[in-house]
Each structure stands twice: as C-alpha cells, then as structure tokens.
Length: 430
Image 1 (cartoon, rainbow, N blue to C red):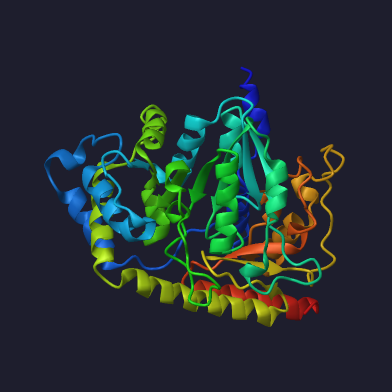
Image 2: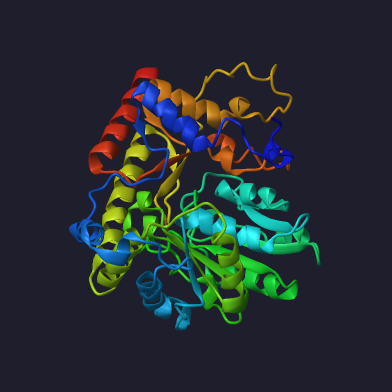
C-alpha cells in the first residue's frame, strides 16, 4: 500500500531522539540526549496520582473533551498573574495529550494548504512536521550565535527582525511560532525582542503560537525575567499559549499539555482535539489539578528552580573541564556545547546512497554525537536535527555543537562528566 504523499516530508527512520536513545542503549552510554528528568518525583505529586487512581466513580470515566474542569480551573488560577487576566476555564483553556498534541491540534485548526508558518531555527522538531501534515509550508528564520566566537550565554543568540519581516508574505503567512525559553538554546527573550515580533504580528495580522513549556525554569542570572507573550499589550487576542505539566512538574510521562487563548481560538483547537485519537487520562488530569493547586501555595517552583540551577552549574563546569565550550542557558534544561576540539571523526559512508550533501550521517554534529556515544559513552543530540537543511539552513552553526540535557540526577551528570574527561585525556584532544 502506498502511503500518503504528505509522509514524504518525514524521516522514515523516526525522530533523532529515537535514533540516539537506541544508540545510547546499545553502547551503555549515559543518555543526556532526550530531555526527560531522572530526578526523584516529590511526594505530593505521587500522592496526588495515587489518590486519584484509588478514587471511585467518575474519575475513571470520560471527562469533558475540553479538559477536566478542576484542571482547567487550576490553570486559570495559575496564569492569572502571569498573563494579567483571569482566563475563563470553560472557554479559554483546552487540555491536550502533552504540549506536542496542543501544537499539532493548533496547527491543524488554523493552517490551510499552502499557508505559510514562520519558524525560528533551531526549532523543536514537531513544529515543521505539524505544519507539513496540515498542508502548510514552514518558512525558516534563524537565531544566530556570534560569528567570531562561541556563545558565552544563551542571550548571545540573536534574531534579525528584518529577516522575519522579509519572510512574511501578506495574505499567505498565517502564523509565527516562538519558543520561550528556547529549546535547545536556553534563550529567554527580552521584552524588546518579543514586542518586535508582536508589532509584525499586528502589522500582518498573524497568529502567534507561543510554546512556553519551560516557563518555570528561568534562572536568576537571566538578563530578563520571563515574559508571557500573551501578556503583551494587544497580544492575547492573537496568541495561542502552550504549556505542559511534564515540564512544569517533571513528569513527562503524564502527557498532559494545554492551549490557552481567546474563546474563538480555543474553540477551533478543541474541534480538532475532540476528533484526533489522543486521550488525556481523567485520573491524571485530576492529579495534575491537585498538584498545581498545591504548587501555587507552596515553594515548589522556587525550590525546583534552585535545584535545576545547581544541576545546570554542575554540568556546565563538567563540560568546561573537558575542554568543550558550553553556552550557559538562562532557561530550560539543555546546554549547547561547542565541540570544535573533537577532531578526526570519520565521515560515514552515506554520500553514495543519499543524494543530499546534508544527509544526516554526513553532518559533523551527527558524526560527533555518535562518536561520543560510542567512544566516550555519553550521548548528546546533534542540533542540526532542529534545522531545515532542504531550505538551506545555516548548517555551519550546528555543525560544531552538541545538545546535552542536564535534567538528570547528580550521579548521571557526574558520571557523564567523568567519562568525557577520561575520553579527552585518553585521546589527547583536550
């Protein structure tokens, strides 16, 4: 049977995360590739889940497809100070099976065939896939580090608002996606940067999909506090805000996300969500509501931010000790590191079987990350997976980078740091 042509835009081998997680397992490497925490889950979270599952009655049945009422109300309470308005939990909140489904359903709800959506490279890989599956066209603009030296912090990465303006086609461009704090860079956008995007959105009547799943992980040394895009003057009416319990509470396996926005936008997203084959488990929605309620009234978010600051600083120091050059992230839980010191990595024999010179196996960052997995026994993700090579993306930028996740327990981070240090000492490439 011939698959639909729309699948031709997707990699038949699967995502980069599946590829490198399998490679880490094969070699027994410390997996700092995929961004799932390995930290202990606080007792109030496990208690909430246990109590919800042990409960009787309707918690084991369908809940409203827009989202469990208690969870919608908890989200409304959580965001009132951050967005600067009280969300109607019944009409301005819709829950989804993780943030990825919220993004997918949003794209399906608003993007027609041949509509264009502006994405910032590097991007989270589900963005272009969702746009393409809707029949739309992803259009790339770039965040760039300094040209003459490695980035010291994530704030060193900049975008050119005029590049975004040039990418807009009036009447064709429908949406721009912004990820703040940014994965994989860790950049926290300033008010000036956000407002410059907002002005373009108003000028060209664009929707803005604000993926803000890492909003609770912004560090004290950030050059700017985190600012929700929907809180900017005039932006709520055109913004879809996406969040995730997985990032908020460190429970990615719960797969609960949400979209927030004005009633007409949320209604359109819900119309897609109710028909896609996803399910948000009712007991877990109840547990998520309880956890958000308790987190709001406790120091959980402050304590977690301090915990992740410690883990970030620890692994940043490990990377510096190996001779790699890490970029200090101001948000999220990933560190990009310059791998220029890793030399003599052999080119895979893929050019003869793949016409594109930018085939994944030929790219330097892929080869370096595979080499480190196999020989240093530490797995990172090659950032060129978050660029569009077909569209002529600036692959010279990710070529010398690797993305490490530090949302891991201290033993894993120390183990990875020790293995990297031993590798460089053995090979003499420090």
